[in-house]
Image 1 (cartoon, one colour):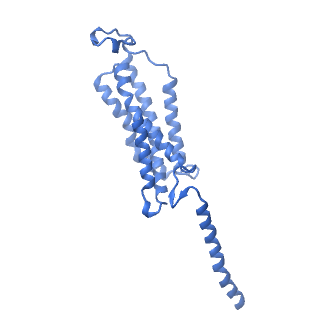
Image 2 (tube, rainbow, N blue to C red; image 1 turned 180 degrees about the horizontal axis):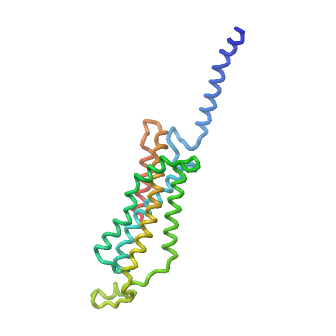
Image 3 (cartoon, one colour; image 1 turned 90 degrees about the vertical axis):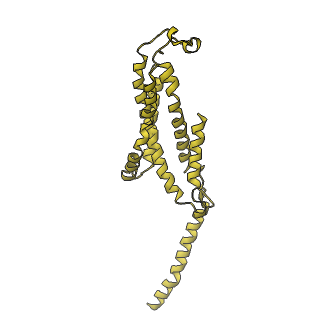
Length: 220
């Protein structure tokens, strides 16, 4: 019996060493990390960058549609146009709520990916509805905003156009809610990924995420 216990003591460290070697070799072969830093362009991580690019584009595009469409095309009043941007951006007020839901209510065992997907599906559904809805006739006859500087001399084509703005505001707000949900879940996944970085390069993932978002925001 003593011989058996000695054999066990000799073989146990050997088994631990083999397990450590396997784990180390697996980490070396893992191309999703380069030098202890997540490879953000790897298929397992690039979804984060795509999401941030999409959020940047929409976050820049939606407010920039307010003046040309709601003020010039629909001829809504100035105070209404000012309120449009605030209403569309109201979705960002729900960031804490979306964060709590993604933290506390996992879907099929996942806490981030389903909410990223759901957010983009919601946003896409609202944008498709906007794209497929027949456009309302403009308030003024086409071309008169540029050709007739005097407002009093312009001919009105659709006097009910300002009242139609509410529908588009709500649709843009719904699309904003979707991409904000995706952004919040993506932020949480990014923080979890950043915690796997080496301490001397900590912050690499966050920096790239904000760079991607800002660049695409400015491209609009």
